[in-house]
Image 1: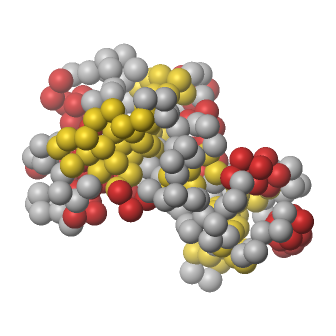
Image 2 (image 1 turned 120 degrees about the horizontal axis):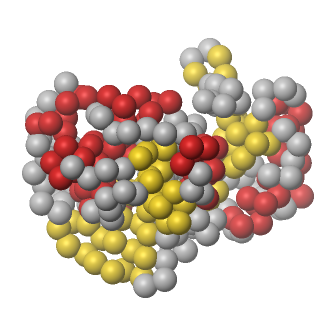
Length: 261
Ligand SMILES: O=C[C@H](O)[C@H](O)[C@H](O)COP(=O)(O)O
């Protein structure tokens, strides 16, 4: 593997690299899931190796736990950590209020529990994830397998009662079988195109029997670090707006690609 990344991976890398600057010695960290979060795990492991910072990481999926362990990041359970200083995670979409759609990688349940148990959540994303209104990305809803078709019908009825125009709902598959999450549940994707009132939808969905959690993260994210393919990074804070817009030196070391070789 070389440093010859595609523009999209470069955008993810620079966002991850900048976000890891927020990590301080001794912190308990939530470690997100997905391709962008994987860059964060690699950059964090590099800081541990190079600077000797001590952290404890709570992974949000078996995939992230495996990568963190492989790269030498101390991993603990959320029950052991109890409360976290910071969670860094990716997102599928973010809007001007830093509300998110997450769960494209089916990890939304642990991600929401971990982010909510953190003093601060930083989202890392390439610029294409920014939207004026959430909903072009299908909204993942985690449901228990028992009676999932009834739960899906109830979700569809709820969308009708909310006058949602586009309300196609599909069970997420893994080949021929339903995709099974880390918590042994299924995912129903809601193809809504536009979500008029994400706050209301998030609350209403979670009242449906069989729904475990939905992928709308409302008022959870504090900062979004946006990476661009040319190495530019914009940091946007929920209270202060854009706080910086500069470049991250793009000099990934060979070590950082260790798990990709
Ligand atoms: O379930 C997966 C997570 O919510 C991811 O953070 C999200 O899907 C973004 O993933 P990626 O960084 O691969 O686009």
